[in-house]
Image 1 (cartoon, helix red, strand yellow):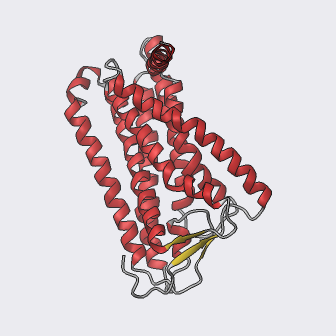
Image 2 (cartoon, rainbow, N blue to C red):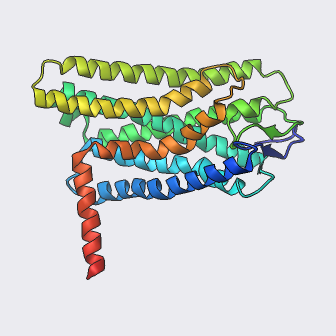
Image 3 (cartoon, rainbow, N blue to C red):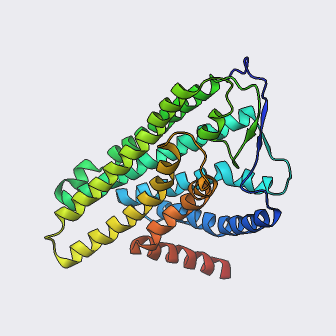
Length: 310
């Protein structure tokens, strides 16, 4: 992360809004949401790890989704909450690049995980006789390793393109965190080529994953249309949950990264939901529609309460 051509050592974050009243309201809402939903995600992880009956690949990937989302929420939310308490909000150049790296590392990793989960559901529903062969534990670990490597490679490309840009002022980022669209605008050089590379690296990849996921779930629903009502109902419930998560995850990302880096009034609101709200909600939505995980969570909580009572 060389800064030989840089005179900027820190960035000033303009934040979500300039209104103190709105900032206080958002602070209370986000903190309350964080304190309720984050422990729920951790409970999902503990439940799946501790229950020997939840060993199917679906639960293995769900546990990793909860871990990724909980980790993702730590990238932006804690600093945003702290910044609400200060009038001047700053972040160092190194801190900004670090935040950008983990934002894309975990974000793309989660997108790849959703693709893996779609493949898992396709094989389970459309090729049930081959499911145990195709989705054994070794293959699951290999897929998990592949999505981590893919997320790392994507994020390294983002960072490599950014650190080559000179920043000589101004240093005000019109957002509450560091991300590519805002940082590029502050570079003291023509960024047209870099913007095209960024859009193709983030935007095109996101759009292709999104279209691929929708196509896969459409194929699943087409294949089960002649199944028994019970099988069709279960497949429909599973696909509905997955499609909800796909839209929550990919909708904001497509809005942010598949267009030229221009400012729109809704940018900050979309970014807030994309980086703070939706990541914490994703595993909860999965769990609320999964009877096995809910039953296991109730047993775990009841067992803990009984132990405490003794």
